[in-house]
View (cartoon, rainbow, N blue to C red):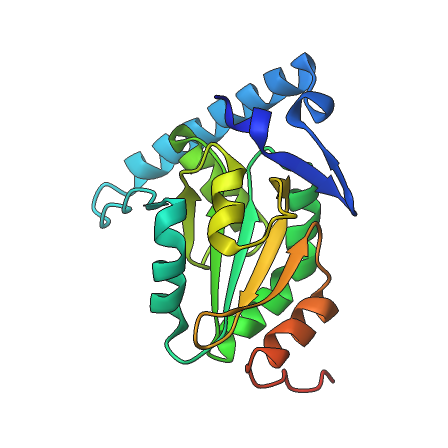
Length: 204
């Protein structure tokens, strides 16, 4: 099953399937973007032969999700954000959430970015996250062709694979909030503080 056939894109509260948002021309453009990203990655690798090798893209399965979240909690809230390289809504949401996501980690919380992509999209994913200013945040590839598996594990029956999606867990790994579709920085801040993270300092 192609991942795009099951995972969708949420625009506001509306969900569209990949077939509705990706025309053949868009697919060709994405292929070109992937090629450019791979070329850049190869160029960077050649320019940094003496540097330490970059670890491969870690993968997590639905069965591993809750144990991983519990491991990451360590007495502080965890934010799990589902996205994909092909998700236009994700590309629009990340810049708006960048500051909040970084603030959460600065206050001791954990942010985990899970990409619903194929393994060969690693270079493109890392390039996009870096461009959006969140490249330093922990990220993994979600190995779950069927989003129903994720919905079952997270006990979120309304989750049908619409992206982006964000889940907030408290320090004990209990789910406290689910954003099915785009989240705002203010709403995410309210959710993480309700889950036990200390409030962000006033701006200005």
